[in-house]
Figure (tube, rainbow, N blue to C red):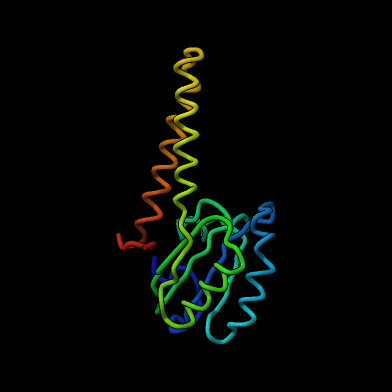
Length: 165
């Protein structure tokens, strides 16, 4: 997605957009760190946020399906997106990289994939050996599919370019 489709900000200034929801406790936990970093990088990085529940069409147009999602734009092009919690150091790193015109080095999400595939294996195993329970096997397969799709999304993004290194 092009920056112009996502926001009306000046495309020459790096932009960080947080997509949040009022019911998202992770979003609320990240707010102080995002606000502090936005203040430190004011004028060098434009920081925007919008409530996905109040503007569902905009969230869909940006292909955001979970909160919090953080999107970064350089020269109007999306250069990264990450869904989930970022710590204060990671937030500062993202702002710093964008202010320098660089793609940020984002934290590894490998542990999340490992947990997702581990949970799916446990569900499928329990369904096969303790039942057999078709329900557990199906749920395990769904968890594996979601985890695999998330892994693919983390590697590929708009225009088929890698978003995470």
